Amino acid sequence: MRIETDDLSSPAVAEFLLDHLTEMRSTSPPESTHALGIEALRGPDITVWTVWADRTLVGCGAVQDIGDEQCELKSMRTSPRHKRIGVASALLDHILTEATIRGYRRMYLETGSMNFYEPARKLYLKNGFEFCEPFGQYAPDPNSVFMTKSLSR
Image (cartoon, rainbow, N blue to C red):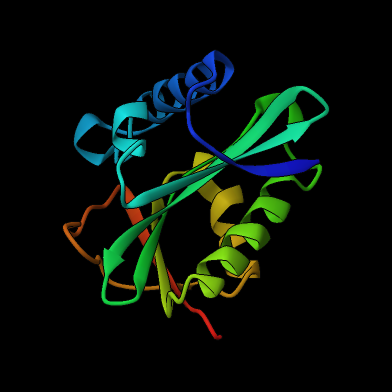
């Protein structure tokens, strides 16, 4: 697997992110779907990484700077055909390392509360995230779970 910072110019990446949005919209009500589209992911406060197995896109993830040495994990996705082989774990480890190098002291994330998102919640818990209250612009939502992790330098 190869993890690289992505400029979101590849049609394969655009399609992968569209599939991510479609999947999120099919599992969460509209008011609880917080996934970002490709234009939002191109924002100056966001870095996106993609994971490749040879020439096949198998995963993506992003970090958004939310100020005060804090960031939010966004757009974590593994290709359905490549789940449970370590893609998400490798990517999350890479993102946590990069966030620490960049000087972030805390990472937050929002994910769904439904059964569909259980593997993601387990991954985050296994990697030291803890449940927390809504952060930033988020409000309490029965369809959302909020998590955080302190990052050490």
